[in-house]
Image (cartoon, rainbow, N blue to C red; front, side, top):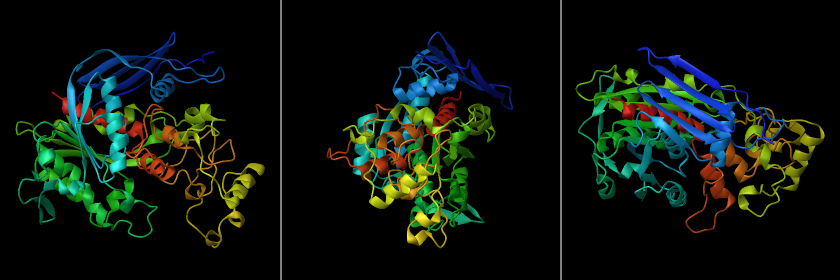
Length: 457
């Protein structure tokens, strides 16, 4: 039996020049219809509505995302840029969560988003990326090895001493053939969970490389994502990157977005910097003529959804043989802690049941915490398979999360393949691939903005 949809959903606003920015999803006779209007860029697509229980009353947008997670086919009926191809490069690619969001956005616009290259130092993550995104090339190296550039500072402004140059023979084949560069440089140095090198980590200097590689490749747009704390880096990496790009004729926009603010079942926040190369004939106001990231963020705003919406159908699957459906084995101490939470209907573990190191005070009350079935999850990290590393105890069953539940909360479709190059996939690898990724809905949001900029005019 199919649950009843709550009817059409439309959120829209007017940009400064009067063009409408909207995302409309309608439900009728088991068919979902989605209309996207980003000023000059628009498309209409359909999807067969996924099944839902008789007790669920899901709005049309919730059904749409449920269908996307389930792998339901998208049919684009009409659009302003149908058949257009956008070529992109993914730096610090990991398993490809950012690319997945961008490609989902492109698919709904009737645009072919073709991955030209993926770059990462993790060979196993690159294998996962290649299996799912089929890029033209994969480069198992540091992004810093791809390009030669020298920034100089004068009067508080940063600029290029000379034009950056691609020094990788493979990547050099793509100069002048890439529209969009995306990337999420390592964020551990900016994370509030990092107690050792927070804001002053050598890896933080990698932040500028997304824009530098975009300039060297001759790309039109670049998208850089990181944790919100990146703006407080001791080296002022965001400010220096904006200054560096500005000196080369790029305009930019930065926005902090939260997954739960666009209706997702996770509270994760990310900082996005989107920059566009300005042709000599255009002024700095050109970025505003297209749909900006802030415009699209406002258009996609919806109430947060609970974890039950995404993982409710996975109950009673934890005994299956598939590694993706198996929670981690628990120590006797953790079994006792989880039993205490369930027996007392509690969600935060009291100090007397915590490790001794926690009992004299700690700053992580969510650790050993239980999720709430009717609320969004907290940030899914690489520790989501371990109860002691966050609020990662299942809301309804006395266990930790499974890899598939974490993947769902990160927005990965069930069809996404997580296999290492050796074929010996394990929990440590799964936790890293899934927890390190940009949640797909945030990649989708940024992808709409990036595609709008690429296809403008």
